Image (tube, rainbow, N blue to C red; front, side, top):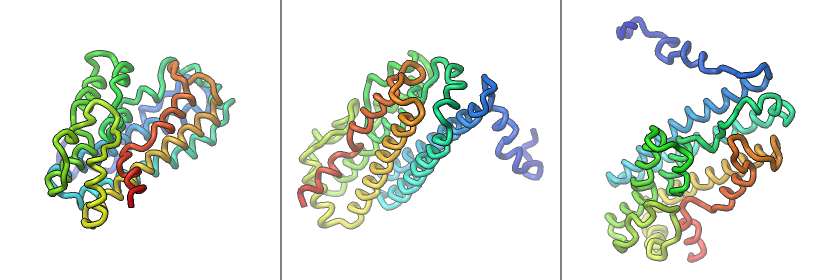
Length: 264
């Protein structure tokens, strides 16, 4: 196809033909089309969210928390869209889902590599997640790279250290291969931030906003699954609602920002 902009239109620029050819139900069940479209749209938003979170981390490394906060605001708006899409999914009754569920085979949302990347970049890193993706696969390699890379929280703690706050070396890169936990030294610095630094405290609140949005996603996702399949085993052999409940109970992505509130 010609690269001349004069030959480009809405259809060709967005590749509408290719996009609309990707919905291929495996049954005659009416609701399978809805199920496919919603999950494909999820993956598109996941891609966009990763794009924004990566950019935000890069801005933090360049000591630009104001611009990073603006980027996180966009990521939060994406999360709100993801939550709203669950309302569409909830229009499907258990019987309607059951009409094509067996066609899903071993596929499961548990296998969304992009969502796992989002969790990793936010600091919720669990090496066990890698086991769901074959060695050498592109998804496994991306997740291994995310596991080894600094999370958004790591980038923020690094910014605190460069901004003159007392952050010990042991607190830098502390959570590379495990979920972010609490750190009293970081909390001491956060107390100063909230009391003395309006710019950085505003960024802290943008992290809290995103964290709260992700917790809202976890909760509503759990309720949608419970409404659709109850407590039955999830597709792909996952534990379904039981697993999703464990994510709800896992707590916040940035626990220091929540715990520090007890110290004011």
